[in-house]
Length: 325
Ligand code: UT7
Image (cartoon, rainbow, N blue to C red; front, top):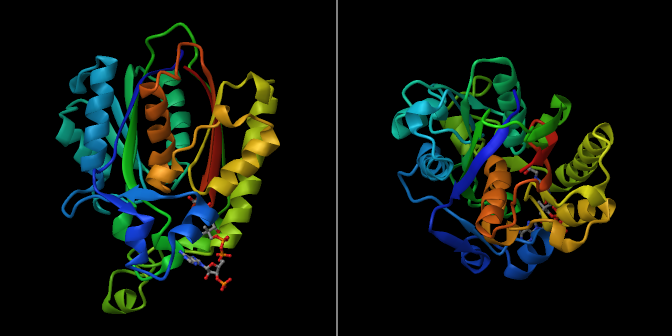
Protein backbone atom coordinates (compact mmCIF):
# COMPACT_ATOMS: atom_id res chain seq x y z
CA UNK A 1 0.00 0.00 0.00
CA UNK A 2 1.59 3.34 -0.98
CA UNK A 3 2.19 5.85 1.82
CA UNK A 4 1.56 9.52 1.27
CA UNK A 5 2.14 12.59 3.43
CA UNK A 6 -1.36 14.07 3.50
CA UNK A 7 -0.43 17.19 5.44
CA UNK A 8 2.25 18.89 7.50
CA UNK A 9 1.93 21.57 10.15
CA UNK A 10 3.83 22.96 13.09
CA UNK A 11 3.55 24.95 16.27
CA UNK A 12 6.18 26.89 18.18
CA UNK A 13 5.69 28.80 21.44
CA UNK A 14 5.39 32.55 20.93
CA UNK A 15 7.98 33.43 23.55
CA UNK A 16 11.29 34.24 21.78
CA UNK A 17 14.68 34.16 23.48
CA UNK A 18 17.26 36.10 21.46
CA UNK A 19 21.04 35.89 21.60
CA UNK A 20 20.98 39.34 23.23
CA UNK A 21 18.69 37.95 25.97
CA UNK A 22 21.20 35.12 26.48
CA UNK A 23 24.05 37.62 26.89
CA UNK A 24 22.32 38.57 30.16
CA UNK A 25 22.13 34.94 31.37
CA UNK A 26 25.55 33.42 30.53
CA UNK A 27 28.92 34.66 29.32
CA UNK A 28 28.26 34.67 25.60
CA UNK A 29 27.66 37.06 22.73
CA UNK A 30 25.36 37.38 19.76
CA UNK A 31 28.49 37.42 17.59
CA UNK A 32 29.81 34.09 18.94
CA UNK A 33 26.45 32.31 18.70
CA UNK A 34 25.71 33.64 15.21
CA UNK A 35 29.16 32.83 13.81
CA UNK A 36 29.56 29.40 15.42
CA UNK A 37 25.95 28.16 15.02
CA UNK A 38 23.82 30.41 12.79
CA UNK A 39 21.23 30.80 15.57
CA UNK A 40 19.74 34.25 16.32
CA UNK A 41 16.75 33.31 18.47
CA UNK A 42 14.81 30.29 19.71
CA UNK A 43 11.30 29.67 21.11
CA UNK A 44 10.77 28.79 24.76
CA UNK A 45 7.58 27.20 26.13
CA UNK A 46 5.85 29.04 28.99
CA UNK A 47 5.91 27.34 32.41
CA UNK A 48 3.24 24.65 32.66
CA UNK A 49 3.27 23.99 28.92
CA UNK A 50 4.49 20.46 28.18
CA UNK A 51 5.70 18.66 25.05
CA UNK A 52 2.20 17.22 24.52
CA UNK A 53 0.73 20.76 24.43
CA UNK A 54 3.06 21.76 21.58
CA UNK A 55 2.33 18.41 19.90
CA UNK A 56 -1.41 19.00 20.27
CA UNK A 57 -1.34 22.35 18.47
CA UNK A 58 0.80 21.00 15.61
CA UNK A 59 -1.39 17.86 15.34
CA UNK A 60 -4.74 19.66 15.26
CA UNK A 61 -3.43 22.00 12.56
CA UNK A 62 -2.12 19.05 10.50
CA UNK A 63 -5.40 17.10 10.90
CA UNK A 64 -7.42 20.12 9.81
CA UNK A 65 -5.22 20.60 6.74
CA UNK A 66 -5.57 16.92 5.79
CA UNK A 67 -9.33 16.93 6.40
CA UNK A 68 -8.94 13.96 8.73
CA UNK A 69 -10.86 13.74 12.02
CA UNK A 70 -8.95 12.80 15.21
CA UNK A 71 -11.17 9.75 15.65
CA UNK A 72 -10.14 8.46 12.21
CA UNK A 73 -6.47 8.20 13.23
CA UNK A 74 -5.28 4.60 13.64
CA UNK A 75 -1.97 5.29 15.34
CA UNK A 76 0.01 8.11 16.97
CA UNK A 77 3.79 8.19 17.19
CA UNK A 78 5.51 11.01 19.02
CA UNK A 79 9.24 11.33 18.39
CA UNK A 80 10.65 13.10 21.44
CA UNK A 81 13.63 13.11 23.77
CA UNK A 82 11.85 15.47 26.16
CA UNK A 83 8.57 13.71 27.08
CA UNK A 84 5.99 15.15 29.49
CA UNK A 85 6.69 12.28 31.90
CA UNK A 86 8.72 9.06 31.89
CA UNK A 87 6.11 6.50 32.84
CA UNK A 88 3.40 7.68 30.48
CA UNK A 89 4.19 8.29 26.86
CA UNK A 90 3.62 11.76 25.46
CA UNK A 91 1.76 10.03 22.62
CA UNK A 92 -0.85 8.67 25.07
CA UNK A 93 -1.34 12.11 26.61
CA UNK A 94 -1.63 13.58 23.11
CA UNK A 95 -4.17 10.91 22.11
CA UNK A 96 -6.50 12.10 24.87
CA UNK A 97 -5.83 15.80 24.28
CA UNK A 98 -6.86 15.57 20.61
CA UNK A 99 -9.59 12.95 21.08
CA UNK A 100 -8.07 10.29 18.83
CA UNK A 101 -9.99 7.60 20.67
CA UNK A 102 -9.26 4.58 18.48
CA UNK A 103 -5.55 5.29 17.93
CA UNK A 104 -2.76 3.21 19.44
CA UNK A 105 -0.08 5.53 20.78
CA UNK A 106 3.60 5.33 21.67
CA UNK A 107 6.74 7.47 21.87
CA UNK A 108 9.75 6.99 19.72
CA UNK A 109 13.04 7.82 21.43
CA UNK A 110 15.67 8.41 18.76
CA UNK A 111 16.67 12.03 19.54
CA UNK A 112 17.07 14.45 16.61
CA UNK A 113 16.48 11.86 13.85
CA UNK A 114 13.38 10.61 15.71
CA UNK A 115 11.07 11.99 13.05
CA UNK A 116 12.99 10.14 10.31
CA UNK A 117 12.84 6.95 12.42
CA UNK A 118 9.07 7.56 12.59
CA UNK A 119 8.81 7.79 8.81
CA UNK A 120 10.33 4.31 8.53
CA UNK A 121 7.81 2.92 11.04
CA UNK A 122 4.86 4.69 9.45
CA UNK A 123 5.80 3.34 6.02
CA UNK A 124 6.11 -0.20 7.40
CA UNK A 125 2.83 -0.02 9.33
CA UNK A 126 0.83 1.37 6.44
CA UNK A 127 2.35 -1.13 3.99
CA UNK A 128 1.88 -4.16 6.19
CA UNK A 129 -1.11 -3.55 8.42
CA UNK A 130 -4.72 -2.60 7.99
CA UNK A 131 -3.92 1.01 8.83
CA UNK A 132 -5.26 4.07 7.07
CA UNK A 133 -3.95 7.09 8.97
CA UNK A 134 -0.88 7.63 11.14
CA UNK A 135 -0.20 10.86 13.03
CA UNK A 136 3.57 11.30 13.27
CA UNK A 137 4.75 14.12 15.53
CA UNK A 138 8.18 15.48 16.44
CA UNK A 139 7.85 17.56 19.61
CA UNK A 140 10.32 18.90 22.15
CA UNK A 141 10.56 21.18 25.16
CA UNK A 142 14.34 21.06 25.35
CA UNK A 143 14.42 24.27 27.40
CA UNK A 144 13.35 22.20 30.45
CA UNK A 145 16.43 19.98 30.20
CA UNK A 146 19.07 22.65 29.58
CA UNK A 147 21.57 23.88 32.12
CA UNK A 148 21.06 27.63 32.00
CA UNK A 149 24.51 28.04 33.60
CA UNK A 150 26.26 26.12 30.79
CA UNK A 151 26.91 28.39 27.82
CA UNK A 152 28.15 25.47 25.70
CA UNK A 153 24.64 23.97 25.51
CA UNK A 154 21.94 26.43 26.62
CA UNK A 155 22.40 28.69 23.59
CA UNK A 156 21.82 25.88 21.10
CA UNK A 157 18.36 24.46 21.63
CA UNK A 158 14.72 25.55 21.38
CA UNK A 159 11.16 24.27 21.79
CA UNK A 160 8.61 23.39 19.11
CA UNK A 161 6.59 20.71 17.36
CA UNK A 162 5.79 19.52 13.85
CA UNK A 163 3.30 16.91 12.64
CA UNK A 164 2.54 14.81 9.57
CA UNK A 165 -0.72 13.07 8.80
CA UNK A 166 0.37 10.03 6.81
CA UNK A 167 -2.13 7.91 4.95
CA UNK A 168 -2.60 5.21 2.34
CA UNK A 169 -4.97 7.31 0.24
CA UNK A 170 -2.82 7.29 -2.86
CA UNK A 171 -1.68 5.35 -5.90
CA UNK A 172 1.80 6.79 -5.65
CA UNK A 173 4.53 6.15 -3.06
CA UNK A 174 5.24 9.25 -0.98
CA UNK A 175 7.84 7.94 1.48
CA UNK A 176 10.14 6.48 -1.14
CA UNK A 177 12.94 5.26 1.14
CA UNK A 178 14.27 5.70 4.68
CA UNK A 179 17.79 4.84 5.82
CA UNK A 180 18.60 4.60 9.56
CA UNK A 181 21.77 4.12 11.60
CA UNK A 182 22.90 4.07 15.24
CA UNK A 183 26.08 3.73 17.32
CA UNK A 184 25.65 3.54 21.09
CA UNK A 185 29.40 3.36 21.77
CA UNK A 186 29.66 7.17 21.58
CA UNK A 187 26.57 7.91 23.70
CA UNK A 188 28.43 9.87 26.40
CA UNK A 189 29.29 12.66 23.95
CA UNK A 190 25.67 13.90 24.05
CA UNK A 191 23.63 12.74 27.00
CA UNK A 192 21.48 13.66 29.97
CA UNK A 193 23.19 11.39 32.50
CA UNK A 194 20.71 11.55 35.40
CA UNK A 195 17.03 10.92 36.00
CA UNK A 196 16.84 7.48 34.37
CA UNK A 197 17.20 3.96 35.81
CA UNK A 198 21.01 4.20 35.83
CA UNK A 199 21.14 7.32 37.99
CA UNK A 200 17.66 7.95 39.35
CA UNK A 201 16.57 11.35 40.58
CA UNK A 202 18.37 12.29 43.80
CA UNK A 203 19.80 15.35 45.52
CA UNK A 204 23.24 14.22 44.33
CA UNK A 205 22.12 14.13 40.70
CA UNK A 206 20.70 17.62 41.05
CA UNK A 207 23.83 18.96 42.79
CA UNK A 208 26.03 17.50 40.03
CA UNK A 209 23.67 19.07 37.46
CA UNK A 210 23.29 15.65 35.81
CA UNK A 211 19.60 16.21 35.10
CA UNK A 212 20.61 18.46 32.21
CA UNK A 213 21.85 17.78 28.67
CA UNK A 214 25.65 17.55 28.41
CA UNK A 215 27.48 17.72 25.11
CA UNK A 216 31.06 17.55 23.83
CA UNK A 217 30.21 19.88 20.97
CA UNK A 218 33.30 19.55 18.82
CA UNK A 219 33.21 15.72 18.75
CA UNK A 220 29.47 15.70 18.11
CA UNK A 221 30.00 18.15 15.26
CA UNK A 222 32.56 15.89 13.53
CA UNK A 223 30.35 12.82 13.86
CA UNK A 224 27.28 14.74 12.69
CA UNK A 225 28.95 15.83 9.45
CA UNK A 226 30.39 12.38 8.80
CA UNK A 227 27.23 10.39 9.50
CA UNK A 228 24.81 12.75 7.75
CA UNK A 229 27.05 12.71 4.67
CA UNK A 230 27.13 8.91 4.80
CA UNK A 231 23.33 8.73 5.24
CA UNK A 232 22.76 11.03 2.27
CA UNK A 233 25.24 9.17 0.03
CA UNK A 234 23.72 5.78 0.85
CA UNK A 235 20.10 6.75 0.25
CA UNK A 236 20.84 8.58 -3.01
CA UNK A 237 22.94 5.72 -4.34
CA UNK A 238 20.54 2.93 -3.46
CA UNK A 239 17.66 4.81 -5.11
CA UNK A 240 19.77 5.74 -8.11
CA UNK A 241 19.04 9.45 -7.58
CA UNK A 242 21.58 12.21 -8.33
CA UNK A 243 21.72 15.27 -6.00
CA UNK A 244 20.67 17.50 -8.91
CA UNK A 245 17.38 15.59 -9.18
CA UNK A 246 16.46 16.60 -5.61
CA UNK A 247 14.21 19.68 -5.43
CA UNK A 248 14.95 20.47 -1.77
CA UNK A 249 17.33 19.20 0.87
CA UNK A 250 16.00 19.56 4.44
CA UNK A 251 18.78 18.84 6.94
CA UNK A 252 18.30 18.68 10.71
CA UNK A 253 18.90 22.22 11.98
CA UNK A 254 21.72 21.81 14.53
CA UNK A 255 24.44 24.10 13.20
CA UNK A 256 24.66 26.21 10.04
CA UNK A 257 28.26 25.03 9.54
CA UNK A 258 27.09 21.38 9.45
CA UNK A 259 24.38 22.34 6.95
CA UNK A 260 26.92 24.21 4.78
CA UNK A 261 29.36 21.27 4.81
CA UNK A 262 26.58 18.97 3.57
CA UNK A 263 25.38 21.47 0.97
CA UNK A 264 28.88 21.85 -0.46
CA UNK A 265 29.37 18.10 -0.66
CA UNK A 266 26.06 17.71 -2.47
CA UNK A 267 27.00 20.70 -4.68
CA UNK A 268 23.53 22.12 -4.16
CA UNK A 269 22.70 25.79 -4.62
CA UNK A 270 21.67 27.62 -1.42
CA UNK A 271 18.07 28.04 -2.56
CA UNK A 272 17.60 24.25 -2.60
CA UNK A 273 18.58 23.82 1.06
CA UNK A 274 15.99 24.89 3.61
CA UNK A 275 17.40 26.72 6.64
CA UNK A 276 15.48 28.14 9.61
CA UNK A 277 18.01 27.53 12.40
CA UNK A 278 18.36 31.31 12.82
CA UNK A 279 14.76 31.49 14.15
CA UNK A 280 14.37 28.22 16.10
CA UNK A 281 17.79 26.88 17.11
CA UNK A 282 18.01 23.12 17.40
CA UNK A 283 14.54 21.70 18.13
CA UNK A 284 15.75 18.08 17.86
CA UNK A 285 13.01 15.78 16.48
CA UNK A 286 10.80 18.78 15.65
CA UNK A 287 13.33 20.48 13.38
CA UNK A 288 12.57 18.66 10.12
CA UNK A 289 8.73 18.81 10.33
CA UNK A 290 8.87 22.50 11.36
CA UNK A 291 11.04 23.21 8.30
CA UNK A 292 8.70 21.26 6.01
CA UNK A 293 5.65 23.00 7.44
CA UNK A 294 7.19 26.40 6.75
CA UNK A 295 8.04 25.27 3.22
CA UNK A 296 4.43 24.19 2.75
CA UNK A 297 3.18 27.58 3.97
CA UNK A 298 5.49 29.26 1.45
CA UNK A 299 4.08 27.12 -1.37
CA UNK A 300 7.38 25.31 -1.97
CA UNK A 301 5.88 21.82 -1.65
CA UNK A 302 3.98 20.93 -4.79
CA UNK A 303 2.68 17.54 -5.87
CA UNK A 304 5.70 15.60 -7.10
CA UNK A 305 8.37 17.73 -5.35
CA UNK A 306 11.33 15.46 -4.49
CA UNK A 307 12.77 15.95 -0.98
CA UNK A 308 15.90 14.68 0.71
CA UNK A 309 15.98 14.70 4.55
CA UNK A 310 18.90 13.94 6.88
CA UNK A 311 19.46 14.12 10.64
CA UNK A 312 21.91 13.16 13.36
CA UNK A 313 21.60 13.18 17.14
CA UNK A 314 22.12 11.69 20.59
CA UNK A 315 22.62 7.95 20.80
CA UNK A 316 24.25 8.41 18.34
CA UNK A 317 21.45 7.99 15.84
CA UNK A 318 21.20 9.19 12.26
CA UNK A 319 19.04 8.78 9.22
CA UNK A 320 17.97 10.03 5.82
CA UNK A 321 14.80 9.85 3.77
CA UNK A 322 13.57 10.52 0.25
CA UNK A 323 10.00 11.77 -0.04
CA UNK A 324 7.91 12.59 -3.05
CA UNK A 325 5.32 15.20 -2.03
O1 UT7 B 1 21.29 17.86 17.46
C1 UT7 B 1 22.31 16.96 17.76
C2 UT7 B 1 23.49 17.27 17.00
N1 UT7 B 1 24.15 18.42 17.57
C3 UT7 B 1 25.13 18.97 16.92
O2 UT7 B 1 25.37 18.52 15.84
C4 UT7 B 1 25.92 20.08 17.55
C5 UT7 B 1 27.35 19.93 17.13
N2 UT7 B 1 28.28 20.86 17.69
C6 UT7 B 1 28.27 22.19 17.44
O3 UT7 B 1 27.34 22.69 16.82
C7 UT7 B 1 29.45 23.01 17.88
O4 UT7 B 1 30.49 22.17 18.29
C8 UT7 B 1 29.14 24.02 19.02
C9 UT7 B 1 28.28 25.14 18.47
C10 UT7 B 1 28.42 23.31 20.14
C11 UT7 B 1 30.42 24.63 19.55
O5 UT7 B 1 31.16 25.24 18.49
P1 UT7 B 1 32.71 24.97 18.32
O6 UT7 B 1 33.17 25.79 17.21
O7 UT7 B 1 32.88 23.47 18.21
O8 UT7 B 1 33.30 25.54 19.66
P2 UT7 B 1 34.12 24.79 20.79
O9 UT7 B 1 33.23 23.89 21.57
O10 UT7 B 1 35.35 24.23 20.19
O11 UT7 B 1 34.49 26.02 21.69
C12 UT7 B 1 35.35 27.08 21.23
C13 UT7 B 1 35.45 28.13 22.32
C14 UT7 B 1 35.78 27.57 23.68
O12 UT7 B 1 36.64 28.47 24.33
P3 UT7 B 1 38.24 28.19 24.41
O13 UT7 B 1 38.37 26.87 25.06
O14 UT7 B 1 38.68 28.16 22.97
O15 UT7 B 1 38.71 29.34 25.19
C15 UT7 B 1 34.43 27.54 24.37
O16 UT7 B 1 34.56 27.64 25.77
O17 UT7 B 1 34.19 28.80 22.44
C16 UT7 B 1 33.80 28.79 23.81
N3 UT7 B 1 32.34 28.76 23.88
C17 UT7 B 1 31.59 29.88 23.88
N4 UT7 B 1 31.89 31.18 23.85
C18 UT7 B 1 30.88 32.06 23.87
C19 UT7 B 1 31.54 27.68 23.93
N5 UT7 B 1 30.25 28.07 23.98
C20 UT7 B 1 30.26 29.42 23.96
C21 UT7 B 1 29.26 30.39 23.98
N6 UT7 B 1 29.61 31.68 23.92
N7 UT7 B 1 27.94 30.07 24.03
